[in-house]
Length: 368
Image (cartoon, rainbow, N blue to C red):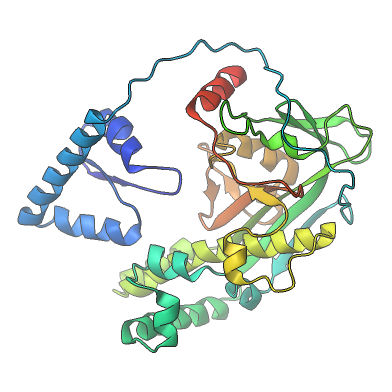
C-alpha cells in the first residue's frame, strides 16, 4: 500500500512507466532528482495536487505506450562473434609504478575542490539557475545555499572519523575478444575475467578493445579502484533530521555523495599521473567534469558495462570491505552509498559509449 518513487542515473522515465509501474500493485512515480521527489511527496499529501499528479502519470504512461516501437526479438546464440576491432593497439604502453594494492586517505579540501557544483547545487539541492554565476554575482539565494553547505562542511571536518578513502591497484591485463583477462602480477596466471558486451551497431565498441590482445607479446595494464566518503553519514544525517534540521540533513547526504564522486576524479587524476599521462596544462574543472583527458574510467551498472554483478569480480580483486570498509550488498550495491568503484583504461581512444539492447541481450545470454 506504499507508493514508490524511483530515479537515478541508470533509470529513465520511460522504463519506469513501461516496466516498473505494471509490476507493482500500487503507485510508482519517476523522480528525476531528490528535490523533485520531495515535490512529489508533497503533492501526494495534498488532495487537489494528488489528483493532478495522478492524471499526469496516466498521460505519460499512455504517451509511452502509444509511441512504443514493437520489438522483434532476434535469435541469439552463445557463439562469440569475432569482430574486427576499430581500436588500434598502442605501440607504447604506459607503465604503472607497481602492481601492489594501495589504500590511502585523500586530502578533503583538495577533493572538495573537484566537486561539480551543478551536480551538488542543482541536481541534489534543487537550485534553479546557474549557481556558479549567481554566486559570483552575490545573488541572495545562491549565497545563502553556499553558506549552508559551508556550515555542513565544517560539521563534517570536525568529525575526524569521516574521511575520503580509496583502495586501488594496477593489474596486468589483456583482451580475449570481448573478455578482459586479469593476471597475477607474479605468476602471470589468469586470476579473473570480465565478460563485456560489444555494440552491434555504431562503432562495435567493447571495453576489452582498450588493452592489447592475448596474441600480443606486450604487457598491458588496467587500474581498478573503490573510493568512499564516510563512515556513518546516514547516522549523522538522521541525527539532524530528528532535530528538525532537514536542510542540514539533506546537505550532509548530498555532499557525501558528491564528495565520493570528487574522490573518484581525484584518484583518477593521480592514476593518470602515475601512468605518466599528462593532462593539458590549462585543464579546468569543467574540462575534468566532461572527461576531457586521456583515458577513461567505467563503473559497473552504467551504459558501457551495465552488469552490476561484475562488481563482485572487482571486490574479489581489491577487497574494499577489508581496506576501506565498503561492503557489497546482495544486489551488488555499495554500502556506504557515498562510494564509487571503477575500472580505468589508459588508451588514448577510450571514450564513453552505450551498449544497444541487442548487445545487452546477447551479453546476458552468453553469461547465463
